[in-house]
Length: 198
Image (spheres, rainbow, N blue to C red):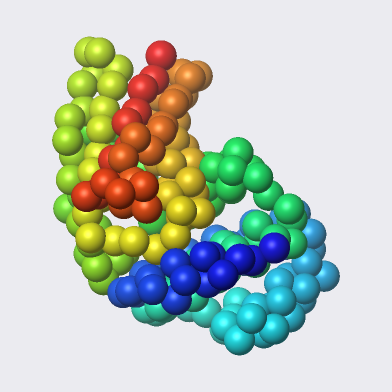
């Protein structure tokens, strides 16, 4: 059930991101419920006065961040997802993200991949920035900080899962752990994700 707080966060989200994010959502919906689920999601979004026609979205077009938040909230509601399931949705999204596929094809190291996300953040988001706090292959730990982007706590969970799969591409067979240890929705100045693989 969408709450007034959900709407408050979603409506306050600023900036834009690439339509590829919604195409990833569309794929997730169809994978888990087919076209019937997609129709239900679009009907639900219409009732929330935030309609999305997923089939008309182009991967490289800019879409409002608010639209992405409402898409994630509708998916959560239709499939009754808990926090773990949202994290796993982020994992799944990275597996089929064309952006991740490009990076893993042309960037051969985990460090290079994280640095590529940092360098090209503005190609995916019109606001915010990502910086690598540290990334140590020896100790198998890393941390990234995301500043000046506040969409919704559901996106924080999704992004943790997304980072997990990104690392899994470079450390196959390793147990990957990604946790948001600082969050602006909890009063922190930025979002921080700590990473560990073993």
